[in-house]
Length: 82
Image 1 (cartoon, rainbow, N blue to C red):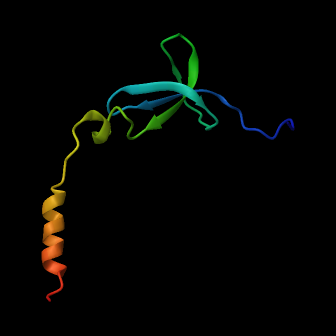
Image 2 (cartoon, rainbow, N blue to C red):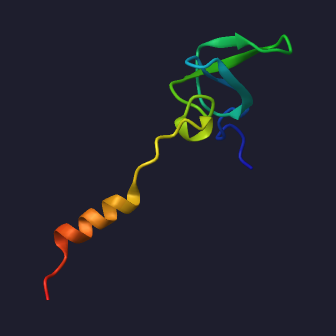
C-alpha cells in the first residue's frame, strides 16, 4: 500500500441530540468538535439529526398506511371497461 494516500481511519462518536443517543464507531469523516466518551477519552463528534434512536421505523412509532384500500381505489379509478 502507498503511504500518505489513505484517509485517517479513527474512532468517532456519532450523537443524535434529539434523543440523546450516541454510538462510538470508526470513521474517516472530518470534524472539529470533540466529546468525552464514557471511558474518559476524548473523541471527534459528529452531530446527527436522525438515528436509529429517533427514527419512527426503529422506535416502533411508525404510521401504517392502508395499502389495500389504496390499491382498490386505483383499480376502480383506472380499470378498463370491457
